[in-house]
Each structure stands twice: as C-alpha cells, then as structure tokens.
Length: 450
Image (cartoon, rainbow, N blue to C red; front, top):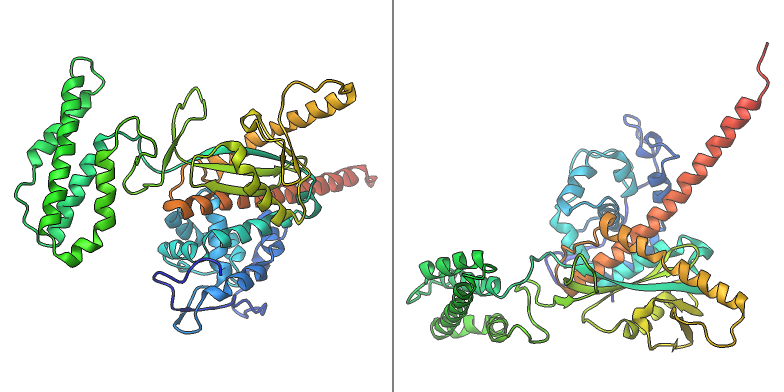
C-alpha cells in the first residue's frame, strides 16, 4: 500500500474527479476559454490522470467526509514544483489562473481557493515515497520510446535542507529554549532559568572568529552546554512519569547533541532535522553541504530522467548504483546495458548485468574508432550537469523545505517529474513554432492579386 492513513485526513472518502464534459448555459467552460495551443493545456489533456486515481484510491477510507479529488491534489503538487512556488503561493495563484484550474480538472472557473495549503502536506504524507515514484514513472513514460534507451547517465548531487550553517552553539541554545517551553507548558517551576547567563553567552559568540576573543567565545559555548544539561536533569526529576515517557526520545536526542565532539562521526547538526549529514563534494565555492545525497539517472540521448533516489546516508557513489539501476529498470521496462558515470564511481565495472563506464585511459589494443565512440559517450555524460542545475534552481531542489527523509525523497522525485513534463511541453511548443513558420512561408509564397 502506498503511503499511510495516519494523520488528519485518514478518515476521508475517496472522491473522483467531477468533470462531466457538459457545458453550462450561463458560463462557458474552461476548455472553451483556454487556448488549445497552450502547452499547459495540452499537457493536461495528455497526462493519464486515471492512473493516479487507481493508484491512490486504496489510501482513502469508505467512510468520513469526502476528500478533495485526487486530480486536484496531484495537479497542485505538479504546478507547485513546475512554477517553483510554496504551498501558500500555489493555492493563491490557482484562483487567478484559468490554465491552472483546467490543469487540475475544473470544468468552470472557480472564485475560491481549492483547499487549505496544509492539505498538500497531508496529501504528500498520504502517498509517501511510492506515490511520488508513481507520478515520476508516468512523467517518464509520456515520452514513449525516448524513455527506454539502452544507455543511461548517472550522477549524484546534494539536496540541502532548510537549515543554517551548523555550529555547536545553536543546538545548545535551542535545547535550553525547548526546556523552558516544556516547563511552562506543564507548569513545572524551574529552580533557575539562567536567562541572563544564556543571553551573555550568546552575545559572546558574535566575535568568535576574532583571535583576541576566541577563548571567551569557547568558554561561553561550554557554559551553554553545562546549562542545557542542568535543565534537562531538572526536568527529568520534576516531570510526571507519563509526561517523562513522552519526552524520552527528545531527551535522548538532546543528550546526544551535548555529548558529541567536533570530530565525531554521525553528528547531529539540527534538532528539527536530525537526519541531516555533512557532504563534502570538493566544490571550491562551497566546501561543505548539509542535507542528503541525491542520485539522478538520465537517458543518454533524449535526456529524460528515469530515476531519482535520495540516500538517507552518505554512502560512496559506487554503492548507489544497484538501487538507481533497479529504479530505472522499473520505469523503463528494461535493464540499461551501459551506465555512464564520472570518476567518483571508480571501482565498479559491472552491476547486475549493467556495464559501468568510467572515464580514464583507454585499454591497450583499443582501436581509434572505439576510442572515438568512448570519448563521445563521456562528452555526453557532461549533459547531466546542467540538468541537475535546472532541477536545483528551477524546480526547488536547491533547498528542501519538506521535513524528514520522506520529504527529501518526495522533493527529489517531484523535481525530476516536472523536468520530464517541462521537456514534453518544450517539444509541443517547438512543434507549434515550426508549424507557424511553415504557415507563414506558405502565405508569403502565395501569389498576390494585382
């Protein structure tokens, strides 16, 4: 089963799209108002929406209030990623744009917002990673034979999370603030709150890089860690047993943050995103990135993305190949015969029947024609770099605002999905431009009356 029924919208009845195709006597339909040459309208007519309704229907209960139509929710997710908008901005713009409403299955122009922005959060939780994979597979299969090439290009990047640059001081201060809030919420009277000391220690961090005041900043940091430990121990003594059981995981996380040292492995860099890890990709302008490693699989010639996986751990690039090739095989309905990668994948020659091609010195005895073909392959491998750049800066991959590991996976797969959809729309627009050019040439060549 895709996703889970946990959350606010678990008791919702499945509701199909209510488009009947009948025209209104008083108001023209959106299909009549929208330009049929517009790529977004053609995309709405091309996407097999019935596939999503069949895949997600089991996630809804037969009882409860009717849910929003699945086409509406999937359409909002696609438009949000396609236009690089937040949930709130997407819902607000949907009311003003008739093409957005037609894309989401509306037959008449609506004057009210389609849903609350938080409904998109619950829908993402409902479909989960598997549901996002279904949407991505449909977007790749819309390209037909172009999405089933025998050779693919694979590369990895980093999907950064929405956290500031990690230092040890900020988690200590956040632990203290959370302890204050927990005590106030449950009426626990603390012996001391250390407000002045905490403020003084945080002020000392402002000149942390000054050689003359570095020792003062380090001493203040150690003081913050001591104060955080005192508040945790006092809350463990004074909280009732039932409330203490609810805070076991939170206190364990706090103690782990207080115990970790600068050179430890598997450090926690953020309290609200404890799964974030540090990745060093060797970039000159950005030495360290804090997020999750993401792998992308693209067909060599057509450039259709047929695989996207967010890795919960910072693993070696070569170890990500089996998972990537399995996902590409599920979408392409065939196993890629060759995978073209960069030198970061050294050490892997074959993976479950797929040959891994890594650039390097040509083997002895290779003919000039074979060397030319290999150079052409590796030049084509560089095409995935601008694709990743577009995913980051155009389709919300540069910073992930969704929470947890599931948020990383959904954001990556939705970015890959809208890349495929945008590619399909560009092809439609190119055909339209060529048709207009031919029509214009035919009109100019026609003999003019004297």
